[in-house]
Length: 237
Image 1 (cartoon, rainbow, N blue to C red):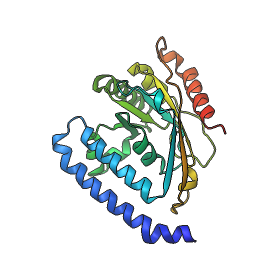
Image 2 (tube, rainbow, N blue to C red):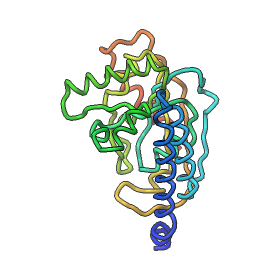
Image 3 (cartoon, rainbow, N blue to C red):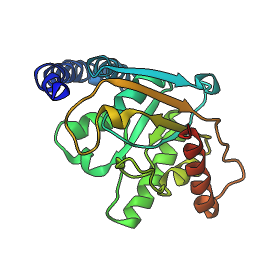
Image 4 (cartoon, one colour):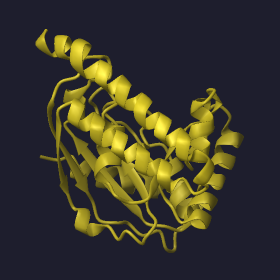
């Protein structure tokens, strides 16, 4: 009951204010920010504000494994709405999200996502989905950015799900290493079926980059299994 009370009277209102404030800042810099870096900075500030307001204490393991001059495909388990601010606030690589195309059709939000460099993926039509993943691989390669993908396809109910093949497809097309991420503790912060925010500790574990040299799209299925195994290893106690 106490967590629900704090959420209603303190956390939720301030999260709305923080979102409006940083959303306005992102809108202001949008005309001058073709590459999306200033909007990414706004998003990181927003994420840090949310982590503080939600009472999230984050420990990151393995940051030394990342070369900030290198492009990556990041793959992570997905437990909660808290995952996005936790990763934005604590992974300093120049990355964007791959998100459902439906979000890009929402007025204002969709325009913001596109100008910030986030990448839509179609999920309804298989042919459109392949085209989206080809576009994502080309964007990563040509723009020199990294990409974060949740290969489970959505938030889990606490059970680590199977990976869809999109992350492996994009990584092979882009020709960049894949970095597995293990998120531990975000489900306790905000479970999928709850709107109550609980403060707590979160751990982000960064695995060793996995190269894609020599792989073709014929290897996508086995590579997807390898990526899931790598994330699963990071989630072990």
